[in-house]
Image 1 (tube, rainbow, N blue to C red):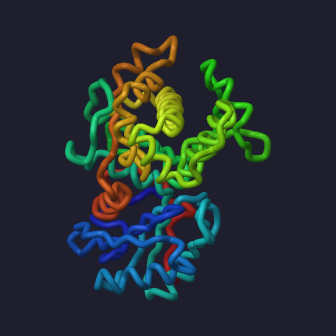
Image 2: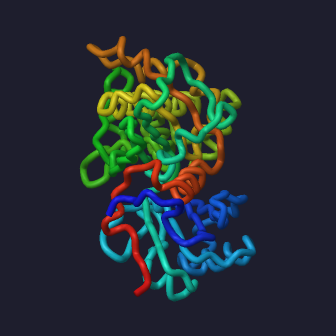
Length: 338
């Protein structure tokens, strides 16, 4: 079904949840449609989604009547598993355990896309040039535990989000140095996907490939330590981060070519803000626009980094409060008791 033109999508108050492979965030949308403060948890600290939601509800101090979830996984059937973690969301079990009447499940980057129009200048940082066109299509991509991507189509009659599993598309070498590194990269079932390299785990895979191509032993086994060393000027770590940012720019440019998002391309996820200086060297933007024969078009599209910590909750809150602003198909994604 398409979200109806009414004041609310589900009974309020509602709990909104943004669950990724590493962290999950929870907040309440109150009876007036206002998004409250967030509660953050580590996914691995809870045995299942019900236990985490019960704990979050206790901390939030409000008993919700419904839940709208953004999940980093494929939504098919009545059981939705996180792709990179152990939680499984079963809507009917959630409603029974938590006393709710409605559960809606969206993709995690679809939720971020829903919130793109609500981002303020303070929520983002420009990466290079380009000028945003009001009301135009926007795209979000972002590395974290995995690699997400979604678009928000500007239709002139509201917003339509679209998402998929674009992080799992193939990615290959382009420069001479990349051709030296690529034979040393680990593969998954014989292939190298974008997410396999442009993610937290991907940082370490790139580092091992760079080390092997350069003839030195890998110096890091933790992505945070690798990033910290690169920011401190360690040359072995710096090359990995430069390659990571270049590949992300290239991938973001590929996604942009599919949608021509003149409203902008937004880089979200947990990694980018932590390595922000590498985005401002020019490597990201050059890889993004270097799309002959359409470089001139790409140069008009702005790229920005999302620094707000909860853009997924922002998007869910906007959708819950004003579903009439979005054309969103909820078939197979809205469960109701009885």
